[in-house]
Image 1 (cartoon, rainbow, N blue to C red):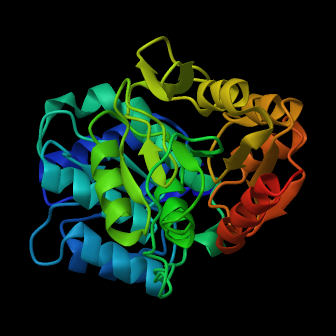
Image 2 (cartoon, one colour):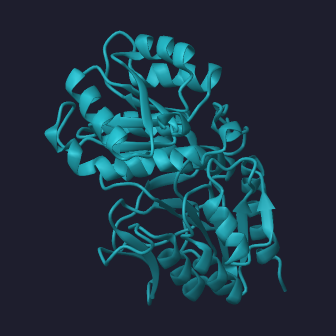
Length: 356
């Protein structure tokens, strides 16, 4: 009976964690555990021997850690991988972000360290991540070469209050997609870029720092009340909704902890609607890979305000649900491969600035 279920390999250096994760997975009745491994080397052997559909992979392991094992998996034997990460330190959070860039579908944070009885509390998160992994586009999971900004990308204008905004929604597969998109936007971009990436509290700061290191634009986690200016990228903090509000001094960031929308906080729909109100026809909405429909209603609001909307195409999306909803529900008519979205954004901004 279990042969019809997706087959999972559980990798962790802790025997306790291997047993606990296996019990959670098996008890769901949706998946079957075909084997376990205690480190990266063992995992690679088991993948070749068992050919599992899915892998759960611990970040911190001896001999060959999760990041190095993940790099091999995605380059040689790609398949959906869900990372397990303690994520209680800056280094742990940065490692989780790097794993997502390398092609991990999702990560599940261990609440209280590497060996934790509290993992039972996030059992549903683990199962939700595995369900999402089963919907991934395997072709889009292969390791993506890092984009190197061309010479001249570093030229900058003095920052000014934003009159144009690019608002971006991303979820599962989003960190990789953002790493491909944001470096393609020039430092002199005459627009502010505001990003909602579905991610837990504590991880968006590491995401912003990593993106800042590979992009011409200045990127940071957004702060409540800060001005929205051209040439900056604002990442919504995990656990807080982000919107834009108009003030006598110009547009500002507004953060709040109101209830989740579509089960997520931050939610892109909240950001997109606020941007449509503040920037009107000078708003560009971009919906990247992810589960669910967040961003679709916001795209409709942007289009109703006279703005433009772009959705990532099916072929390059890790999961096409969010872009598909942006097209079907929101009405987005511009559909582009991930590596073409940056150029499309720049062309749309140029056209907006030259409208008589």
